[in-house]
Image 1 (tube, helix red, strand yellow):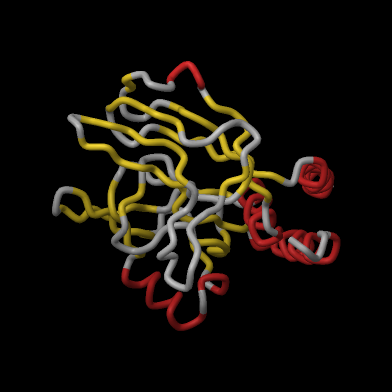
Image 2 (image 1 turned 135 degrees about the horizontal axis):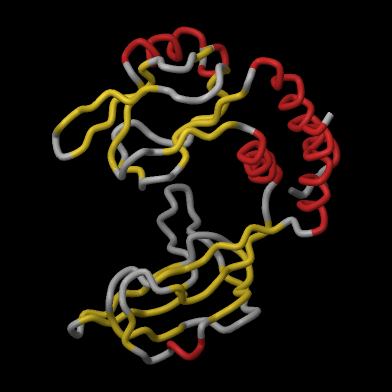
Length: 218
């Protein structure tokens, strides 16, 4: 019953504020020059191959080598650290926040991340499903694959060394996969989300409810 109440609370949160807030950081050290203002609309990359870059957010200049950084998402500039304009900053400094209207699919995914048991990357590395798990996924689809505590679930590839990773969560099915094989994932980032078998009806209810209740334009 608590799951039901949690879900209602999550749903009402997204209904009252159906936005994602994307923080934009300096990509490396350099002198920053902002190209947008607060409340300005920005666009993400577009075109069939995303060949049209998103709106220019800021320029960062290091050793007379300027680089334009473009918006990764569409939305409105909600906040800018204006005191940094024209200043030299270190890499990873928060420069601004974009308020991004969430699509129905993103809202479902965000709610699922709150409900599923997330298995996180133990280290910054590249990951692959263990051969046995990948074989089962290929045959039946991830959501038909039940995994058990202690089972070898992944191979972690770091510095040309492969290390097995064992699952330490609750028994359940692999409901959502958040990584691409062979693409680097940061430490602590979710790799996949597991749903306990008894929670599957709740998960389906969440997806159905959001699809039915959300404004069609999302």
